[in-house]
Image (tube, rainbow over the protein chains, first blue to last red):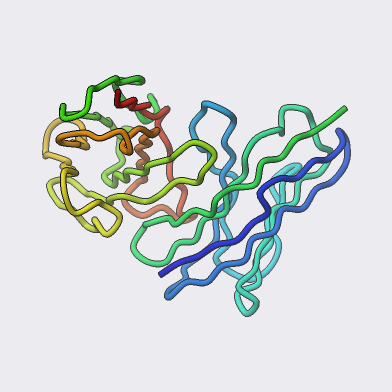
Length: 109
Length: 115
C-alpha cells in the first residue's frame, strides 16, 4: 500500500519562504507530484519529480530524495493568494496518484 | 481547449436513491480518473479508466459503486442506493496518452449531498 505524511497546517508571513515536507512509503514509486487546491476549488498541478534533485518553476520549487523517500515543496515570496491546501501525491504504477492528506497554508500580512 | 467538465456541480439525493456523476475529459485525453474527497481530507483514488476499459478499480467500494467510460460520451460514476456516508466531493481528472510529467487535469468536482 501507500502512505504519505505531510504537516496538516502551516502559517507564514507574506513575502516569506515556506517549505512543506512530504514523506512517503509505497510499494512502487515512479514520482512525486504536488497539487494546490483552494477552498471549494479543483486541485491544480504544480510540479512533478521523478528523479532526485530540485525542480524550479517560478516562485515554486520541488525537491525529491528517492533514497530518503522524502520530498518538499518550497514557496518563495509568498503572496496572499498562495493561501490554499497543498497535497503531495505519489505515482506508484500506471498513472494512478495517491494523495497525502494535505497541508493547509495560511499566509498572513 | 475546454478543460475537464463535470456535471452536475451539485447533486442532492435521498438515502436509497441513485447518483450519476458525469465527466468529460479534456480533448485528446484518453485516461480518466475518479477521486473522492471528504471535507478537510485529501483525495482518495477510486478508479482509473481508458476508453471502454477499467484499468484499476482498487479504490472503488465493492458494492453500490460502478464506473464506465464508453467509446462515445462522458465517463460515468454511478452510486446505487446512496447512504449518508457517500456525501463528498467527487473529482474527475484526465491525462493524455503519454504525459511526461504525470500531470492530471482536474474538473471542478461534483458535490454530492445525501439527505
